[in-house]
Image 1 (cartoon, helix red, strand yellow):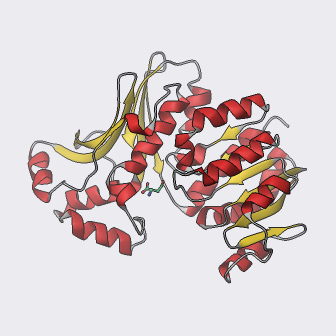
Image 2 (image 1 turned 45 degrees about the vertical axis):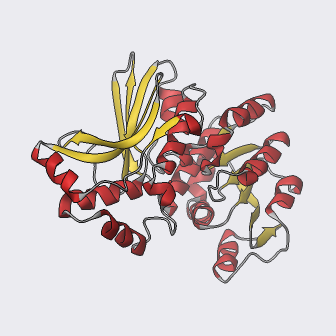
Image 3 (image 1 turned 90 degrees about the horizontal axis):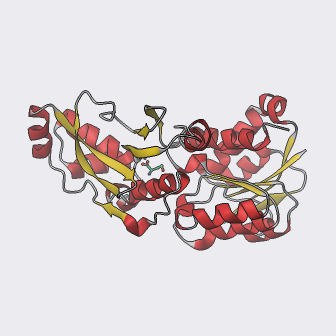
Length: 322
Ligand code: HSE
């Protein structure tokens, strides 16, 4: 029986719980029986015998019923896998939960982009403890990239990665391209629709894309840090810039690019017929390799079930050989 603790029970945590409940039979056919032994977030916790639907219901009505902190759960519950899905804040909180789990000999699956500040250390710790840290959900939501780089392309030299890693920016730029609207108007629309964050600075200043680029770079062995990324956001792009670009057969996208020489996130001209001229909230990644040539992937970069799907794919990865 695989014992799972879910730390963080907001949108993604609840998405994971819903999918675990809804797809239990299929999941158990593939990886064997599992039980969620604890869920915890800032509102409280739930441990012992409970149904996932109950936990979701409690959370919807205001909070989880037990007055235990997430750290108490991380330190004391008996679990084999921690699913760490707290919010990305680039601080030590989420990382602290993960460290506790790894130190205790449990594997960790996370969607928390905070790992960008400690990924190499966490991977070393996991290796030392003979467990795994899996983080497919941190980059590109449902778009499969981490396992693609780590497994399928394991023996390729990755020469460069280039892509679109922020759905909010791509949505804003698409609307500007298609309707000639000014940046501010599209941003407030994106906020009203709930696509952009309440404080969208991390999106529009390229911070979110830079964090994801660091995670990708670390995954292929570049020891890059956030400070190494040359970064420019999309706040200065005007409808006029789009007009000029489009007359010449180009559009503008926020492109994240990593090569051995540099890491960069910036608005770039992209040919209108290029694969990277994708529209809306999609993410995409172009991978240049030595022996496999060029690989292109695209998919939904965010969303409750999309991110939860990536978490479940890591759960499968962890237990596929059982
Ligand atoms: N704010 C992010 C985006 C969410 O727009 O892509 C997914 O990390």
